Image (tube, rainbow, N blue to C red; front, side, top):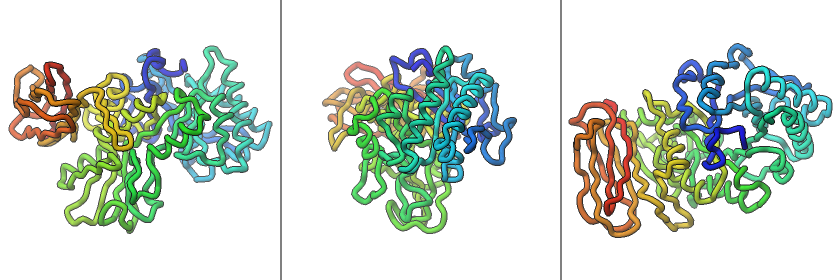
Length: 443
């Protein structure tokens, strides 16, 4: 899998989708390249005759972003071009394209030329969604792409995104042999298309949840045995939805607009109440009138999902989408993702009610915060614990814990109201072993 950075073979891949319409408020200079393995630049669309176009309403000048590609390549990060997306809900030109041998050949040649002319390292196919009648033609299309992209040295990568189930339009056994990875969209379980409110990306299925979960989706793929685990990538959502609803899994009225993680943080700061659902392993916010609920992912739920990925030994993950967690100079969800997968920081995972602790899992919510945040950690056994907070000059500003604690989960509140804005370090010592977590206080 040479399409990602040089350490990819030793780490779990992090593929972030960069939507080209975001360049105005999230330019290439803000991307945290060091926390990525690969960027998927989204989207261009296929036409039924095998030609390609920018998304409807856009021009090639709107889409092409050589500055982003140059910066990524300078830092050793590969960039693939993503083709398709939800768009018109009919797969754009994919159905007719895939059914026509001449159009397939033209499309495969066009994609190779597009990559070579513009500096992309591969092609990511996002056909949402092939029907059962497209199944054979989809494989033919991917075969044509694989043959064309392999004539380049080094060969260009090929990947695809898939829904959160073994949908009838996909011959995964055949497709797995053609692609470098398959990203499963384990998000959007609830939204404006569901009658009730619910979590965008619940890790586990609640009895009240009839839409599925990350675990139910990934279990299907893993148990099918059709895709090597190293090629199986799980999806993360850096956004949520604002439901007009009296509570979780209750009837929804009106629309359910999307809410970025950074916007969810602002809702919490403005007085919405934070809650944690320990079944789904996800947070949600409610307003004072209890008429609206925002379900989303934060650093805690992202860490749980990453540790689930480690437990299942999957190859990596896909993120929709980069920039939605941008807060000032920080991208907390992306930083948490990379740290959990490749630096062994938050390492708690859960499986059928069994909790295993590989490390202390030191983390905090919110991050950035104002003025309070909850610092959490895990203990495998009765231990002597100290938890102190320091400023960037190494001065201790608070001792939160100093004594013996029992095994299990612990949460301690840190109030920085009397302190200046800036970076603070929470330092956890458990029987002499240290763990450090960076927190950003923004007034």
